[in-house]
View (cartoon, one colour):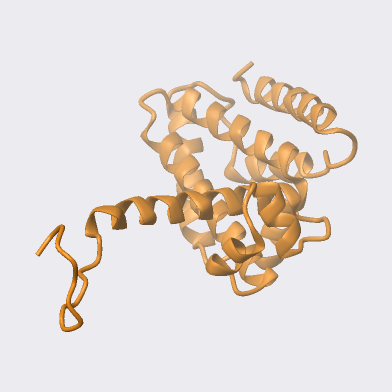
Length: 195
């Protein structure tokens, strides 16, 4: 009976009204830990450092990740999902030129902002289908060519070559990397006919 004192034989029911709130907090904490792990990747990545960067406690870190490696796996898997979403967005854009441009610009921005993450991503080669990625990238390029928005001889390999070149933009300050990356994107896109 609510409001009455419990007798020794009664079982207290959980406060189910707060469960969704706890789940939301847990999801938000995981997102904060992943973001902190992404920012700190390439440095000494300890549970204490990641938790502090996220504004959380080491205990919260361990509720989500048993080890540093588990966090890195999760950060790389999160980036793989983000890459897939970027490709899907480019494919679904009704303007093929804008789709290709936005894909390249977003990819360059991530590479410049998180060079350690990109390097780790390529080292681990996450379980996302390279075959599907290449097929979808081929479709993005073919749509842009069919719309006469790019040079007739542009290939998916050309896009991959420029993305690989941008991975070389890894030294200096984040602002400097971003500026060099934008400049390289401008040059490449202009060369493809998207300038």
